[in-house]
Structure formats: structure tokens, C-alpha cells
Length: 264
Image (cartoon, rainbow, N blue to C red; front, top):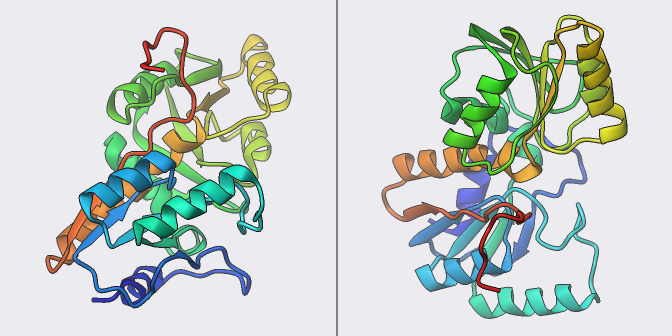
């Protein structure tokens, strides 16, 4: 199978605008596949690991060059990274729009799958945002602890109510639309998101809780809130295609923390 053939298979069943970011980012679309890597971000370290493993293709979810459509050409970091990728010989495709805009958005599907939560997912009027009704009530603190343990997110932040059982959870992974609207919705108790405007979202949740309302914002970090959708993609590719090897490559969180002991 060639790289472009696998990509065409992956995006089948999804939708995207006429101008989409889901395009070839580097390399030869006709490359024959023996090893396929999947990741959230094609960081410098991921590219190096993929090259060392011998990957022919790398499927990413987010931009490689710091702009949604990657229209940045002359910055020193971009030039150096582009050179590294070209020298690696790896074919890179981005899988974002088609992943979100399908009958079942594969990002929340992956997050819920690896969290082991059972319940019902419904679309909301807002782009890439969903409402999850849990079969078993759970507190925000219990959910955050589960995220840190199961999804390996180092720091989950909680604003608002911590210890009241809830079942109505808005899934706003990454940075989608409708986060504030869903936080304000009286039928929503917990909102999960990747990134947040603290003065708007977190302060609303804090005041709502102080006023006696069951309202929580949980901030997972952008990577922590979406990468398990890519992990599930890698799992399914490995199950459906035995003619090539598939490996999920962890890009790691973008932030470091004061208690971490680092080499540099």
C-alpha cells in the first residue's frame, strides 16, 4: 500500500471544508509502506524517533509548523525543522478536519475509550463539541484523578465544583467552539476542555460553585485532551493492516513542571 492510498482510506467517511488542512505536509505520497507512525504533533523528537524506527509515513493531528494552514516559511525554527523532516525521508500527512467531521468524531471517541467511561454521546450545536451522559455519576475530582492516572496527564486543573456527583459532561477537547455556552448551560455540570481563557471560563465556574451551583471546568491541556484519539487510530490501523507495522509515538506534554528533574 502507498502512503496516499492509506490516507485516502483513513479520511473516507469524514467531511472537510473546500479548503482543508488535511493535506500532504512532506515526502512522497507514492511511498510504499512498511512502517507507519501515528502521533499528535510531529515534534523534532518524534521525527527523530520515527526516522530511527524506520517509519515510511507519519500521520499527525496538529500543525507541524505553528500555523493552522502552515503558511510560515522563513522563521529559523521552521527552516531547521523542515530540513530535518526532508532529510528523514518520511511522508507526513495531517489528519484533523476529516477526523473531527464524521458521524462519530474520533477524538472524543478515543478519549472516552481510554478513560473507560460508559454512556451516551450527543452532538451539540457547536463545532467539535459534544455532550456525554455518563451511566455512572462521577465527581470532577474523581474524573480528574482518572485522567492523570489513565491518560498520563501530569497536571489536570479544576475550576469550580470538585466533589458533587455528576453525569452531564460537555466534551470540548482541544480548542473547539461553544465552550462558554456549554459551561453556562444549566443542563451541563462538567466541561472538559484542552485550553481555556481563565478570566472567562474558570472564573465563571468558580463563581457558579461559590453560589451553590454544580458547575466545573476541567482543563486537560491541548495534547492531553486529544492524543488518545490518535492512539485509538494507531490501534485500529494495526488491527486492520497487517501488511505494515503501525506504532503510536508519544509527543509528550509541551510544558514541564517545577518538580521535574530534567537533563537540560
